[in-house]
Length: 237
Ligand code: ADP
Ligand code: MG
Image (tube, rainbow, N blue to C red):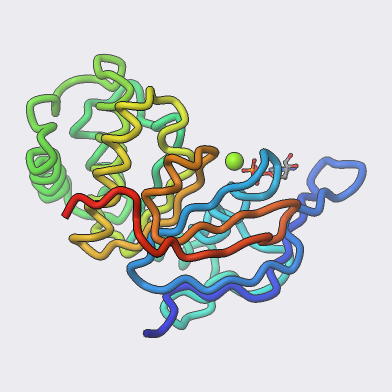
């Protein structure tokens, strides 16, 4: 199978407003196949979020290449990046990142509105996903009227509404208790298994990483260990 994402000789340094550049990624190479569920672990500051942001076209590398579906993407214009990001990637964050003053429905519609989908169509698609995930009755609530687990499920719906090829999740269970975290991981594992969505997820916890099919460990901006998890600990299907 062709790799979905190929990263070659990736370097990233931060320079802005700093006395000296901070070297974060140092000659990082990795290939990710379609349908993988990759968990990224590593100490704080090892470059996990930086890598995820580069893969999701939220930032540009200092040097090196990233290809997605055999297309070099790191040098695309901002407009091209935004287009590809909105059509192919879904993002989930530790802090949920929902817009506080907007309803659940509006939050889930947002990525479609960014892609210039007509409002009525966006609302229909958002409602459909919320209904399918059992959140339909919460559509008119504000994020503050939901539990953390519910907010993260809304964020998953927001990621799914564009029918993404890849979900990028940065410590999505970091703010949740362990029972709720397990529920969120089960949803992601099911999306990976049943819908074939490729998932790349950062976590601090081994237990969370055991939901994946592959575990990559980073340290000081390089990959220290990369292994396939032969048997997933959590088999539901
Ligand atoms: P992780 O997610 O593994 O904790 P990050 O990718 O967030 O690590 O950060 C890696 C390193 O890059 C850290 O030393 C961090 O301080 C630094 N860093 C991250 N973002 C910036 C930035 N915008 N400007 C300067 N340094 C940054
Ligand atoms: Mg991080």
